[in-house]
Image (cartoon, rainbow, N blue to C red; front, side, top):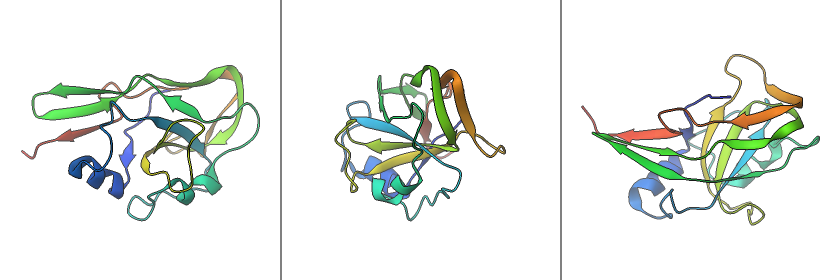
Length: 151
């Protein structure tokens, strides 16, 4: 599935601009799926502790590493992209509404691990799930998100 874009949490946007975190194409990132009871708060949510209570559980679900991070540059815009994130094929996953990306390597996340952004996977639908099928989230052609100069 292709959805997007990834909405950056405010603290991540500041960190990208002030250089307080590793460059995204060098950072270790982990993807997790959140259920439909999560309500994104881009201003207030900053760490894994803010979203971990909404992480789905059960079936074949497990967090996934975000691999192949790259910056794509064009005139007046830069985008962050990566490889598609796959949970498997076939796989059974409980209903999920959001993809969250967190700074930190798979298996090393802690409650204070910073969040990067969140993406609505289902749009106006209540959620998406997999029942013995593929579950893969592909970044939009323009990247997970873009930064551009003002016109």
